[in-house]
Length: 544
Ligand SMILES: [Ca+2]
Ligand SMILES: [Ca+2]
Ligand SMILES: [Ca+2]
Ligand SMILES: [Ca+2]
Image (cartoon, rainbow, N blue to C red; front, top):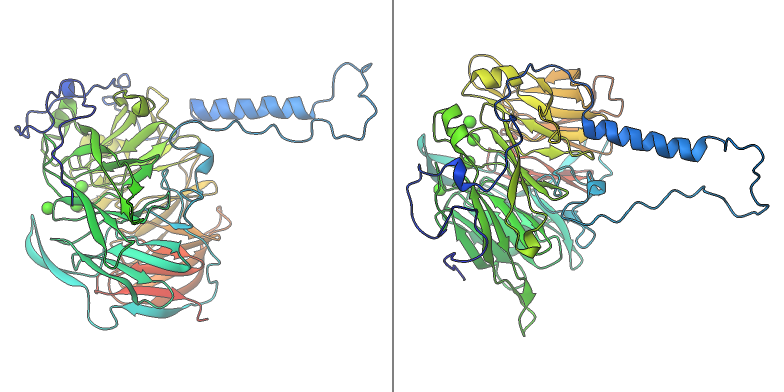
């Protein structure tokens, strides 16, 4: 096990020694080497429908030019094409090869082409991939349960004291992937352990990996095929675990206290992204971290890592502290990457983008986007083909800003006023969004703490349809094969045909599982894998 103190690598301007301990309340905006989108954090705008953003208009314009070039007859009537049977200009111009971190053409696609699977929370760097079908259109059955009897339970202490936690909850999405002829299901649970199961049988492939506290987040499986699993825990460590030996083996861990300054808490709920040997992860210590993994194999062929924390930065600034007036700033969502910008938000409601274009050449990441939602933003951001951000926000602090902006919002990071539209979910008690929105055709599907499920027109924010489930719905909606799959907190799992995005979803089937279904299901080859708050982990599908 390596646990190296962090003393080298890139640091944000103004941070002189990242290993020092410091007051957790002295960090300020001036420690962040970022430029702020002019006025973006302070603009107080109406949550109304806006015309398409600049990027969309530019894209549409580009398409029109291509279309005109390809389809309009040549105005010079005297010119005749040479007599040839070879097709002329009928093959589309090949798309330029994307150079950078996260290819926009991979939105909605699997993480990569090296490992078949659903490898991280919401599947890929833009958090827009939910698995593969064929999804059953008739009522499936329970295939297996883990454990075979009893539940996965452990005690954990949080701000509400010590309680017994069972099964899995938010976000809790399992990873499912193919390795050496088997389909693996890997997930962390409230019994404090990471589990490695055979998707076919529900039997263990490897012994459980214990951590020191419950696991709330979702694991990430190495997308490049190294036998590595990356996971956080409430025990304050983020770990890299090798799965190529008799038992899962910790190769490295990062403590929430390895960096400073920190703020609020020390858990790790976010699912990391790994691209080009770099790992990106936000922590409840309120810091965003980048780790160079230096993966390899030893002489015996066992996987190795030699990680180096190359960058970290507070996810807050002085403006945010003035605006929220408390210190609950933790990063609880999973980072998303589009082109060369890493996006995430925090419990203070600061949505931010960090430019990593020069990371491999030693250039310090720079903050290039800042937007304040006004309230706790724990839902992971989904990013579409055009780089638009879909953000779910809680209505908890009930600030004037949150009231104005709305709880389901679309942001265009290229605009001085990024708010494209906002849909409200407000009222007394806790409201707003905890699950990550699903992008499907021309709609974004959100669910709310009060059990409402909404299909929202991505272009203009119009609510196309809405229905209610037993609350709270904290899981993220999943759409595979034109079928929306979503569980509720009464213990039922539902499937709806949503192929006509202008029509109300058509119910296909409902099965009773029992226990609040709070974790997001993984869908792989038509089978559904998920945990419940009742204690068990379940596989559902058509019986073979
Ligand atoms: Ca903790
Ligand atoms: Ca948390
Ligand atoms: Ca939060
Ligand atoms: Ca909250």
